[in-house]
View (cartoon, rainbow, N blue to C red):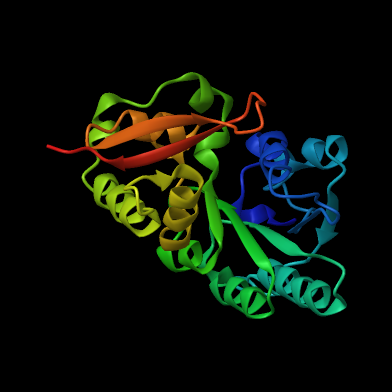
Length: 231
């Protein structure tokens, strides 16, 4: 986990680590910035409580972002060192777009974390991108406004993924649908629409029908299937 502290919010640091734990274990946790300034004071308590290593980078020249360079150099060292299986890049800065693509070219996964203002090229360069606004406690407690359920850009994405994952019987495994959506749109996340799970999101769509299938071995596990609702 490499954090561009100049372009990341310390207020969601704990939630950020909890989110990253869903994808793997953060064996390296570093935050880059000029810690001699007052700009990063909000990060200092988070560094200690979450065992994040601060990496000092002085600003030698006004207007030049030395923090980005230090983070990129360390990322390349880790990539070629072969000691990690993937990267979590925490920033809303498009300067890391090429870094993300280079890491993926090396065969490793890249998970991006940043605010909704993050430029599209950086978002698209990641395997998965999570908007940090949905990690805030108030975002989890407050349902999304109703208009999001009718998002015109959402329905075509869902229907296309369902069609691509459809089996001969006309039903598509929801897990396969979710995987296809993320590949097409790395920033897709049910929480962006006020739902904690993809199953909850598809159930709210009038154009889709959901079926629950119990596990054949008698365990309490179930599998969800989805198909386009007939008119």
